[in-house]
Length: 262
Ligand code: PXP
Image 1 (cartoon, protein in one colour):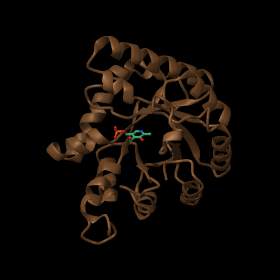
Image 2 (tube, helix red, strand yellow):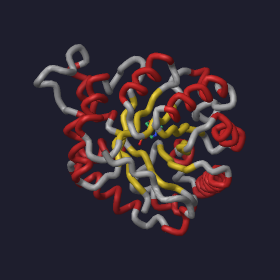
Image 3 (cartoon, protein in one colour):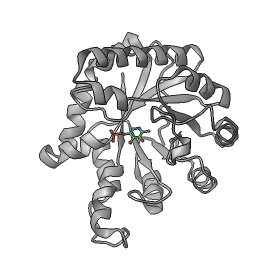
């Protein structure tokens, strides 16, 4: 079964539009933690939140409350900086997903530059591994980046599907991108890495990901919160789970998903 991790950041983005100075105030809405609990009720398998260095949406207190309150598991997205690494080690989420925030950390295709940042990433991966936190690296479907992900000691990669989402309406480009994602997933699997995917995914473009083997989890945010404006968050999550249900079980061919229930 392909799992759904809901990225809850955009709920906090809406709150910050009005309550940037006082997100902890009682009347500050919408509450990303309440939204996360509702997504869990609707059947999602995990919650993802990205504490950015500039705290532009999710703030520290949100992440701590998510860690306390959710019943699935928390995937903590983060930049590989000393401040955020220390926060994550203290938080102890089930997973961390290291993502680029600064231009120099980004490959030409928008994923994390694992090759360029190998030394520092290896150090962080070791610290997380020692703390019992599984590490994922958000990478483009690029052979060198995937090879480096294995070398620095990550257990997972999250394949960046942004380019796939961008070209989805153009069949030749879409098929080429699906081929790249499939090749990347096969390579990662053969190296012993587990494979997630995310960015720009929607109910329209998710079904065709059946062509990409070994996927365990999709992390999806923007479209769910957008769709919630019209049908509500619970229905938006259910629609997405339905769109994901056609993912072939045999395509994963991997170890079972690590459900770090708390
Ligand atoms: N995965 C990662 C690593 C992300 O940073 C994001 C947010 O950009 C997502 C998944 C979710 O992307 P989207 O909001 O486009 O669904």
